[in-house]
Length: 279
Image: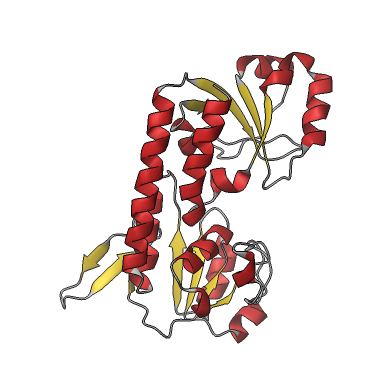
C-alpha cells in the first residue's frame, strides 16, 4: 500500500492511495463518509470526528462518537441515495471490505474516493500518513506512528523468546473458512512466530475441512470473533467431535487481529499477550 506524499511540479503535496490515485490536501471543509469500520475509528483517532458525516452500521468504535454519525448501510451495500444526500467530498473505501461495483457507483457523484489496501502490519504507517496528509492531521498521524513503532518493538521482544507454531485461524463456519498467507491477518500472526496453515495461492480466504488430520498438524486453532462471531459453544462442539484437539482451541478477538489503524496498535500488544499465554 502506498501513501507517501509526492511533490508536484508546482510544489504542492499529494498522497497516493492503493489504486494509484493522487489526492491533494482536502482542506478544513472536507465532508467524509467512511465505509470501513477500522478506518472510521482511525479518522476519529486523528481528530476528524466532526468532519465524518456518514458511516456503515458496522462502524462501532468509538461508540460515543459514532452514535452521532448517520449510518447508511453496510460495507458491501451502502444506501447510495442516503450517501448522495450527505454530499460528501471524500468517501473512504477498502479493497477487501467494499465492492468494486459499489465504488464505481459512488464515483459517479463523489469527487474523491480514498481507497486503501493494507496487506501487512507496517502498512499502518503509510495509512496514518495517507489520512494525516490528506485531512491535515500530520502531527496526530506522526504520534500514532510512534505508538505503533513502540508496540511493534514490544511484540518483537516478546516473540524472540517464543517457539514457532502452526496455526489455523478460523473466520467462518458452514463452511469452515480460514486465511491464506498473503492476508493482513497472517502477516500479523507471523510477527509472533505463528504460521497460518491452509494457504491457497488463488484464494485469500479459502474453505477448508476441519478434520482430524488438519487438527493434528496444527499447534493452535484460533476462533475469531469476526466476521463470524465464534463463541464458547462452537469451541465445545469441536472439542466433542475432536477430543484430542481440546487443548489447541482458543477464542480470539478478531478486531485486534484484523483491524487497521488505531486498533492495530493495541492489536500488537494483544498478540504479544496471546503468544506468551499460548507458548
